[in-house]
Length: 201
Image (cartoon, rainbow, N blue to C red; front, side):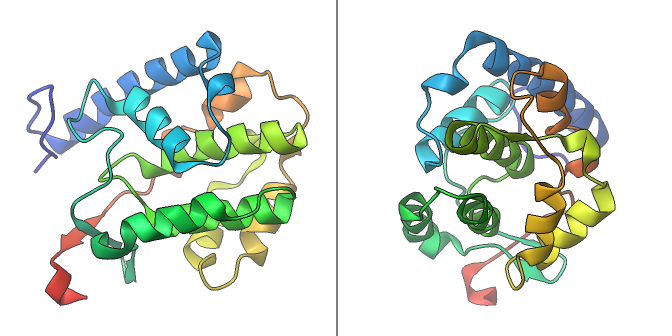
């Protein structure tokens, strides 16, 4: 079953293809319009703006905090009842160094504030933050997909791996559209969410 969407698509594979096509088109708009440069780095409000722009043509919930609990495999993301508090905490986290920025990125991944499209939106958010604070971005073409996914899976307990993976891929080429677009490549998607009720926590 496909998520309810504005396109009226009921097949999940077809929805995934359209989602990728539209979100990539909207990501290019974000990059070329200068809209990103007007956002406040490292804030949830900026992430919500990015998410709404990428997915607003597809989902009614674009840019809004999810109202269902999500899990992937054995890992459960932040429960809905604590999500607003978690996002306030993330906003207040320091972001002056690479280590602090990645710690903030890990916490935002644990929060997983949206029903769908968290990975793509948050990688753009991360690059925006790195560019603003350090004058660098991640060259996602240099990030091994399996290393990244495994490191992200383990990051809530041990973030040294994801810091290593991303540090090795830092570049000063902050104006490359090609590098920027690699961040929303489908290879890095987190698929297979399940929802659960609060009493299943």
